Amino acid sequence: MKMKKFLALLLAMVMTMALVACGGGQNDTPANNDTPANTDTQAPADNNTPSEPAPAEPTGGVSEISLWTYPIGKWGDEATVKTLTDAFTAETGIAVKVEYLAYADGDDKVNTAITANAAPDLIMEGPERLVANWGANGKMVDLSDMFDDTDMAEINAVNEGVMNACTHTSGAIYEYPLVMTAHCMAVNLTAFQEAGADQYLNLDTHTWTTQQFIDAVATMYAYYNDTIGAVFCAGQGGDQGTRALVNNLYGGTFTNAEHTQYTWDDPKNIQALQQLLDMDGIEYDASLAGGDEIAKFYQGALKMAFCWNIAQQMNPNAADTGAEKTVTGDDIAFMSFPSEDGNSKLQGGIWGFGIFDNGDADRIAAAKQFIKFMCDSEHTVDAVKAATYFAVRSAAEGTDLSTIWADDAIMNEYTKLMPYLGDYYQVTTGWAGARTEWWNMLQEVGAGNDITAAVAAHAAAANEAAAG
Image (cartoon, rainbow, N blue to C red; front, side, top):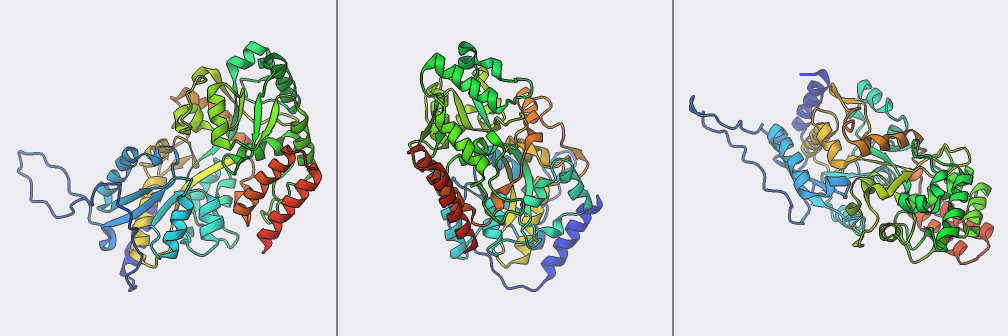
């Protein structure tokens, strides 16, 4: 047994011996997974008859823990998740009761459960929720004791910003990361080729400059005489796309490096907003959010999409837009957002697990076992592939994670965007309110309001809310 596993088990045994009051409410929603596995000792098998091994005895007498997960790749698919949790149960004797959340109302469900002292043991999502929201509000367990020097080295070897995003300003680590990706944009390559605008695309590096973007849109508009791309702003859905588009065009920022202030009143962002407003073929559209934009892109009504990532590239149906899709597969080329020198700073996604502090040391220890099983063991390959994103670490307990997608042509090509990942600023205080201010600002710009005044007012409102 490796030293890290031994220490993890020793820690779990110590915690289970602590005298603590029983606590940690269970959610009342019917479970989607099967009932806990039978952990009774089986009778010795006949020497001539093969038998299935009995599951391990659960740690500290905990026979079941609960996991709530947002739809992160196939971690939102019951059959896929059941395969993963069944493997965990077989090794530990601990069953996992899973609740599948939707982004439309998932936050409300979690907040209601927290208020009712019925939060799940585990939750899977990103730092903007686990760290900047529930962690900052004292609802999560500090996971610092789960990371040794090897863990840190394996994660930092991929991207040094991951642990910064998972760590609160207090120093507490509220998320154990599993996967990450870079958000990007996409173009209808067939339409670009027909118009002769593909000359502005570098399909080897998947990058382009601001001037190439401007020229491409002009060429496309001259050919189609219709909207080519939409700055969608009906709500916050997919707003990582509009933020990256505006910030990258002329090198503006959204927050400061310390994640204490919103800086989108940067003159470079005002320049970008004006440029987009002045371009034939680009429209500010207050009727569309990110998912609506993707639907119109699939339908061919839009020739580029600013709300894109590998999940759409791998399986367009994952967007769940309900649209009849005429643009799929080889018609679509993913692209980095345009920047003046072609080296953009992409918005990223980081997803992993956090543990709600329900006051039960045994359950917390069991939840930590689950995290280690999924994020730092030979099983991590399966957990990463289920998410259909990229591993946040180079290896896990001796298992190389760097070549997980080597045999998948699309995933392997998409790795070219990963070096462009920028600052994970979604952990800035007041994040939820700032997102609202952003799309409201875009609506005002699209309606013809003074850009400088609109930007200043909404950035100030975001900072006021964050400070208060």
